[in-house]
Amino acid sequence: MQSRVEPLEEGKEPQVTNRTIQSKALPLRLLRVLVPFLALCVAFSAISIYTIRYFGINSAMTAVKSTFEPCYEEAESLQQWIRPPLNLMHTMTDAELLWRASFVPRIKKYPFQRVPKIAFMFLTKGPLPLAPLWERFLKGHQGLYSVYVHSLPSFEPNFPPSSVFYRKQIPSQISEWGRMSMCDAEKRLLANALLDVSNERYSFMGVFDDPGPFGRGRYNDNMAPEINVTQWRKGSQWFEVNRKLAISIVEDTKFYPKFEQFCRPACYVDEHYFPTMLTIQVGNLLANRSITWVDWSRGGPHPATFGRADITEEFFKRILGGHNCTYNDRSSSICFLFGRKFAPSALEPLLRLSPKVLGF
Ligand SMILES: *[C@@H]1O[C@H](CO)[C@@H](O)[C@H](O)[C@H]1NC(C)=O
Ligand SMILES: *[C@@H]1O[C@H](CO)[C@@H](O)[C@H](O)[C@H]1NC(C)=O
Ligand SMILES: *[C@@H]1O[C@H](CO)[C@@H](O)[C@H](O)[C@H]1NC(C)=O
Image (cartoon, rainbow, N blue to C red; front, side, top):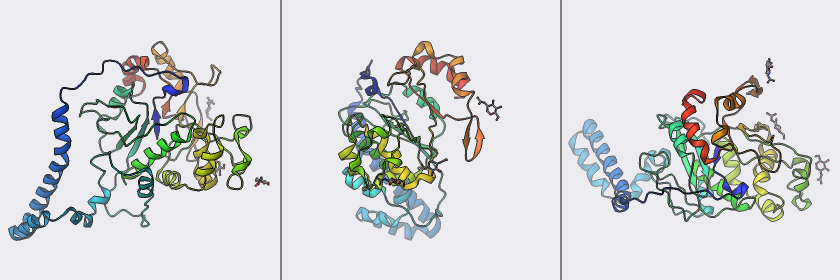
């Protein structure tokens, strides 16, 4: 699942207002060093208490001794594989990350209580103008979601520790709209999310076959034989996938070079790579529609952006009602779970109306 603040599409620069600079920088840094240490201590205490309870004080002493051994001791514990990473920052290169993220268990039944989570992935230059709305949406659902943010490497987030975005930045690189670097960023988000085995996602992918110049017209014959024009697809970058599809994306080395080499502006690779590649590999698993509501009725190359004055109850009636679609082969009137595009000025009325029209 993905959502983004995307000033790039219309060449707008996001405004950063009121960046409060923390005088808390030092304690924070200290905390950063201390937290993993604290976690170790907690783990250690838990082990001790457990062993004292079950095996008496003698074996507790053994446990004490063994914790002074180097960290590889931990490899024997399942926790290492199922616990979400404490810190999303890591030192893996992209190649290392994608390789690591492509690990798939062959035994389908989990030997532990797995609560599936939804990974919310944010691709942004930096600021998240609608963050307060997301905070409210996610509030009270700890353990059922994860958050990942890919921003410009130079961006310094200043979310407070209580925020759902606090320390949710993943190691990021510069990405440009319409270029392969954008797909790389999306892959990076997916791969980081895959590291947490509890993340499961929706298996929706907005895909369609567009015979016109902005669809098949962007196909390049050099992509054959891996890709045939009849398999060429288009989709928006707002996609929802499950673990299986996410792994197909991160593990791909067959189609990537073709797109990197032959889909350059005016072929916008971020609109074609995942939809085409997934259609060829796992077409039967795709919904071929989007669950993101978007308004193209105003014409032009960009969908409508909604600001303060647009956000009314009637507006939501229009978005939420009057649609028919199918979900798991059954008809449904809930066709959209997301919507775009909202300007920063929409935040205030969105927060005001959300309890009534969105239910949170
Ligand atoms: C593309 O696929 C269609 C249908 O499978 C086939 O008829 C056609 O020959 C293929 N074209 C190329 C260039 O391979
Ligand atoms: C989506 O399209 C693919 C072929 O492109 C097809 O195999 C699949 O069944 C379609 N999915 C749905 C839900 O119709
Ligand atoms: C949706 O489907 C229902 C039942 O089939 C129908 O009564 C209704 O008019 C449809 N609504 C739209 C907007 O197509």
